[in-house]
Length: 407
Image (cartoon, rainbow, N blue to C red; front, top):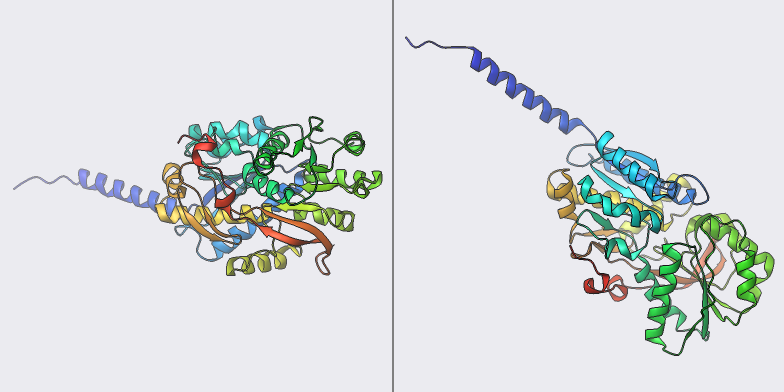
């Protein structure tokens, strides 16, 4: 009679039980997504509005069964508008908090510093706000995606709008870092292509980000020969700028004024009727500009939850969570490399239409919005946008060769 040992059987049963428990535990563990935004200082409202959009998406997705049968858990970190802080936050989220993916970044300077570290983290990042073209250009990598409009896209649209005005002498007021300089550079290049005779003045103005006093720059423009001004100041700085410009009579000079992120509802809500009527305002998404089911749902849900109209930053952050849902379900896993690969070339339906992450640079083909500030909205307490122009994403995007991206 052959001897039979129960020991190997017990080992096999124990191993199978352990594997089954681990699989069950993994299935029950939440999917963790780390959000890195400016949550303090003069631009903190941008982080706050992004959180609102994200939290709304997470609530909806979890109520509908989550992703791959697992709930989403959000983990937030304050970048403080500093690249070094954002990098440490990303490492903490991935290595200490077991984040499966990342979203965020408000500042172009922060994005430029953090994006090169993403391959070492082996987790995907969807940028929802920072607009420097570099992160889907010469700094691109397989783990970094952007779901919002970049500077080059928005400035091509801006140049097309500016070319319809009679102003020929143009200058700029923008923050003293990548966003301000790149906005002026791309605007000027595209404007020159349309109208070689336009004069891009050498006298430009770049106050530091977080400056409290903009009056020297306002006065300098008023004393110059400028007929048009590209203004890329944003966030709390823009609110302060508008108020100081009102006090100086800046808006009574007959200048063509183009605010590159002036139609952010964070800014419009803070200013109310202090935002002047009749100036050009841009946004990456205007909540009344899109006629589709996704936009109807998003605006209604956001208004019900927060009692104010959604900003482009809230919409981009909201859409990023749904992008992860689609990519993770397509990949069948939360593995960082697999999810990043699923995002490449992926199209999704969002509040601002069909959004595609272009293969080759991972930049979303999305639509810049430009309009003119109009009367106060009777219900929402902000300026309306008149003469709204929504530019097709592909029509204002650089070619992959032009971006310098080499994936």
